[in-house]
Length: 308
Image (cartoon, rainbow, N blue to C red):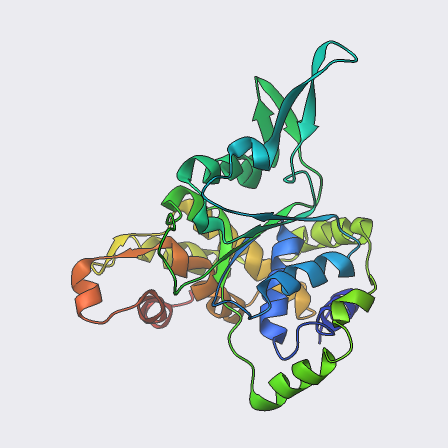
């Protein structure tokens, strides 16, 4: 049974996002852990609406950046601008100073601009001209990218991919769900009337509760063993970093809390393993030739490593 506050949040988001309960829960895991989410899917799947619906549901400040090749780092973080009135340079905050930042088509901007998010995503701060500015709490980046059209894109470097707690996809709707979505937008989009069910303070309180979720040494050993095994498997050229172990632990605690438990079970870890680890590993060419995928290799490891 879901935590009561979480149930209200999920139900509210699902007024806009139909038939994607698991995807909504994964996004909620992100906001509960201050983790960033990368959504990799084709256009028209509701990636933008998903993050906007979450922001509206928790009364969060929401900003969107459309990443393009001509975008500059200062367009993301902001910078110092000369003020004729004061005769001094004043810092003008960029769109990254928000609670939920939608980095739309994040792989369409240059590596220089992509790197502007590295400090924001890890340290939750922005450093400009030797001065550091702290970002609001909570802070989450929801990045989107199109897995089909790669012309004119700049693949995200491993350092940035590793900062995303999870990489997920939305997926197509069933026939009945698509009919429901279609008729539901005949007069107006449901996002227009969506009302908040939680406030920022409530979200910060839930984040503190997540920290109190118990995780046994057995489950913790399983997480570390699973992540470590990705570095030893011969089909994997680059395994997951220790940051992945931390992400999998935090995500598992949040998932357990969402499910109404104050303790983590191995099934939580297994449920989230691919979402957390899939984008963090690189395969050897021979593995690709053998038609291996990140999903299949992680599944092998999940079944191979004992919970003990």
